[in-house]
Amino acid sequence: MDLEQGRDLVRGSMILVCAGIALWVNARIGLAFIVIMGLMIVQSVFTGWCPADLILKPLGLKNRAQLVAPSK
Image (cartoon, rainbow, N blue to C red; front, side):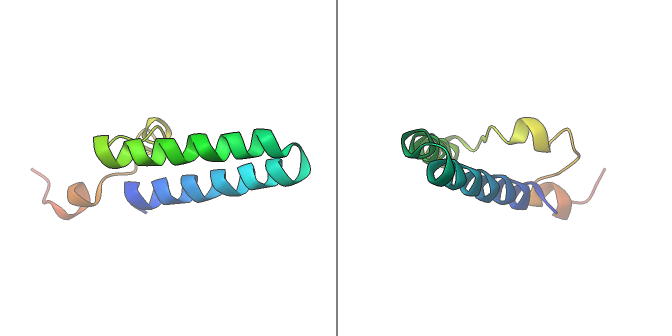
């Protein structure tokens, strides 16, 4: 698994958790979390940095470019 796939896994999981919160706990809180997730996804498109990288990089996940490029 590369870093991009890890990001997608975290995003999808977080959206499902937020939807569950909206359904079973409180709709306003769940929808607020979903809005925050959407804003973070939009910012990651423009900056190339995702908060999930703080967890995924120490786990050893690499960018696709780093996986394809020969090691020196």
